[in-house]
Image (cartoon, rainbow, N blue to C red; front, top):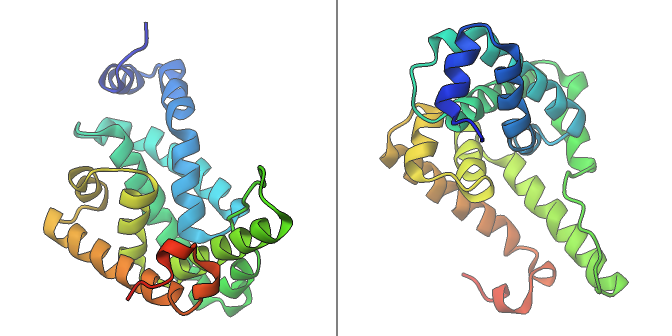
Length: 195
């Protein structure tokens, strides 16, 4: 029988490390995905994922209920934004380095090599567009469009109102669309005439 998140949190508060390990196993891949898309590099995302669960374990007693997944995403996105802000203060750790090696790698199924190359280039452009967004807009886009959270869950994860989340998401989508329409050759035919 699979335990509910609330049961795992309660057991973790009582010092049950095995229960917390179930939380880690349940959400590790999702937290890594959020972190990776916030910071743009796998190595940094792995560090953030580890730090997210360390922070969550230390603060599990302060968790006030609600959605555990949203709480973990909030920790991860905050750590990612903090890392990006600190990297902006240290030019030697430039975001440009992560843009040279985008996180998107498209597996080729039955695509031609040309289609696979275009798809990979589109993935790189999408990642660059996401990384160019202001932190709050990037997090809203990632939580809703990539991780599939509802507006309510994203609001809980970011500590913002639903209206603010919707506004940030709308601006983020618009900026990504504006960037992508400048490269129509990368877009599938049905999206080439957006505007």
